[in-house]
Length: 361
Image (cartoon, rainbow, N blue to C red; front, side, top):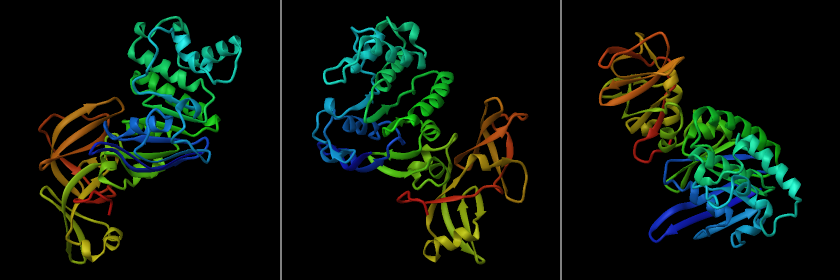
């Protein structure tokens, strides 16, 4: 088991990580997502031991390892920057941790079998004699990934392991790696700025923004019930539509007021909020998959901003007052910029967030 207890990382007055506490169970994949600069790579380096936190403890299987050097932690890390040895071949880069001082003694034949099996997994077996300078960026990323996965580690830390691969290979490896990693008993941290990737591969997801954990939960919980505006802006393809407005109590009901629409809110939401929030400034969240184009009792006028056909469906961006609203539309229709349409909100289950602090209401 991997535990991070109150991890802080400061650079002078700047704080890269702020009281980060996480636990990863044996065999569990914890996905960590967040925008660039959120602290994901810093977190990975602290777990691996190549960086010492300003405060807090790292524990592996109940042992405090914060001051233990990286070569004694048995943490396999894949760096975002790859960190390959330029003078070594692909084969020798992957074999390096198996031959390093302190590694369990293995015969030359066993090392060769382990390395070549790993290179076949990432489709690089035909390039084992090349050096990093002779590889593309995606190929170098797969070499770095192989060097991490070939190890018999207590913890695996994979910092953006497939982000630079082409879409087809990324999707193939994503599923294959989940199957492979689930066979082992080591805790795994997998980071990526793409929340969709993390939701697809992880058992649990931690959303990290500006060095702070905004939410930790199962992928379905993160997707359906974001706990903060920062989470809502990251999760989903496309992400949640966010409209700032006010709440108003009228005729025993609760309304969301926006310059371009007035939306009655469900009674259950009104009772949960209570009377003290009946006139609050809020942000309304609408899921793109729950919106439709067409007239209904709950439709509002809008104009097409851009239409992005993607095959089976397309992403339609509509101008609603000063805001943009995105929704998925199945193929069979086409839209022109400036075209007048009606946006059907009848099937939407709205989410509300505090406009000041960002927390879900």
